[in-house]
Image (cartoon, helix red, strand yellow):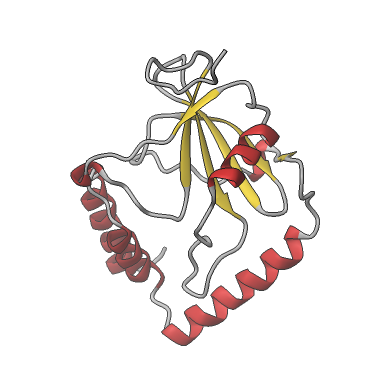
Length: 181
């Protein structure tokens, strides 16, 4: 039937995260996962190493300069307390993992991008450059769209992964820089 104490902790964790949905920090998520998983640091290191090894091997199966559609059965699980956006596609290359979401605004799509490697702490490797984001946007079939990256006020920040989010528009925002014509 499961451990009732662990089930209660999971319920409390979920309620706590739902209450604080706009103020969830990386530390909150890590603490929740630690309570949930109850593994030693040594075991956690072994798990991370195994994941790194698996990803290095798996990454070789994907192209460098194009994206592959991932079947819906293989998509990551939704985290509803983070966003009401609806995932419409998942794409993968050797170096990048992309999720495309329809936002609550029907004119705006969101591209969520992370690397396909994890570091020694089990987090996605950081440091996606502007040039890489442009290339990913193009490989995802969105080269003709305008993209904006948003930096919210501190109290609205949700930072649970080394992931970048581009909001895509068909039309240029009024503040967009344009090439001289």
